[in-house]
Image 1 (cartoon, one colour):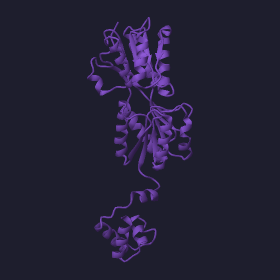
Image 2 (cartoon, helix red, strand yellow):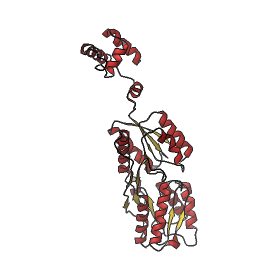
Image 3 (cartoon, one colour):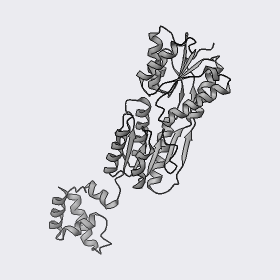
Image 4 (cartoon, helix red, strand yellow):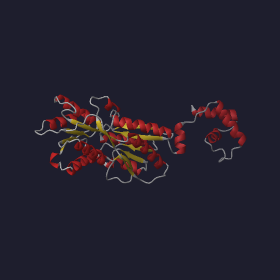
Length: 336
């Protein structure tokens, strides 16, 4: 369609298709095309409502104004919230966002990266799922600007990172539970292959030790899933000395823990307290309302987009940014 339009404009203006193409590409001056011809071509293009091919434009300029986003799961409220922020902020800068979902599978992650690279995205914001940083070797080799968001690899130092201070967040959670009189505090973690789960678990263990509660450490769980959390919580509640409070290291883990608590016939917070990672607007509608550690979701998405665009423009050096979490006190933690 675009070629037919160019040919039509060229015939009406009495010049070649290449001349029309050069004028519409803003190169009339470079090719010494007269102002009279340039004006005639532009006027005719306006009458024809000519729209240049986006693909051709991208090839000419070497950019697509598109950001690739790699996310573990769109049905996870934390990831869906941060995706919304990224799309909104990218649009403000004139960028579109194309996404790929990995479903917490390293093979899907590798395939998603390949798809994004094949789409010639200008840069990638990635929330890794796999254990191996080698998945990103091809991205680095091609020099594609990349920012790792929330999760990252501790052995990669030449890719930008925007995350929460998860270690401090876990310590903050334990400190609050201890201040409410709890000593037997169980912790249900996610996939230990992800740095967020490892760092949060380390923060939990160190906080328990700092309060002299090393003997009471109860750390279970292997996935960021409702099913794994349900099983881990059930095991904790079946212990001879069960916890009086549980720290859930994600929203999905919280849901599995609550289901297990309810099936045991226990009430929150009367019989057992619970504190979750990640805030959610629905927490105010649950009974009881859930006390949680809130990650700065909006700031994380904003900083990831700003950092990536700066990298695309070649304006910044590699950095690691760890943002401060906050404690949101509601009703699910009882003083004992």
